[in-house]
Image (cartoon, rainbow, N blue to C red):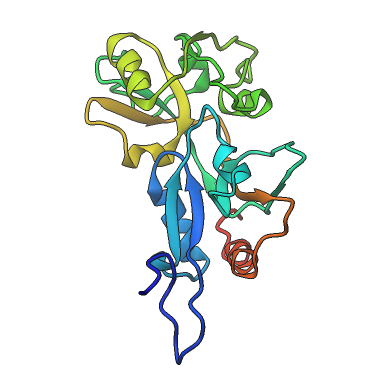
Length: 218
């Protein structure tokens, strides 16, 4: 029986396992990285991970590599050079006072309450995603619990809450949500992370190298 997780062998060569790539949010960002690496999408299996426990799948060896943003300080993980950039954005409900804006300043966003760091997500990374203060020193209030995506969207729909996030989420945002570019926060560097031990399999290492070579983070 043919292994559905492997790419087709050529000329009798052994099949290469598909890369199990952990993602959160839109698959479009992952697909762009795969294409920039010169790989076919069939070579990769996209596997969603929970932002409240982001490294569980990697540590359980259910993933080969995962997409991360900003610098990690996890001793058991290795992080590639940036392979892409993801511009900053804010998600609000369609009723929100900012919803009609073509773009916003983070100083405007700070007038509204945001979300606290979820679960086991590293707080030092959350400080990059949702800065404690704006460049002008205005405090960004983290008032709401960050739970499931459904719960997040429910809070945004029923309140004037804001979710500081990334432009890539526009591809998966529900119709009643508005994803608005933030004009004065730099794009987030996007990298790949994998377990330090054991060393990644050869096909995973090649994929990471190809992704770094094809990087659009320039």
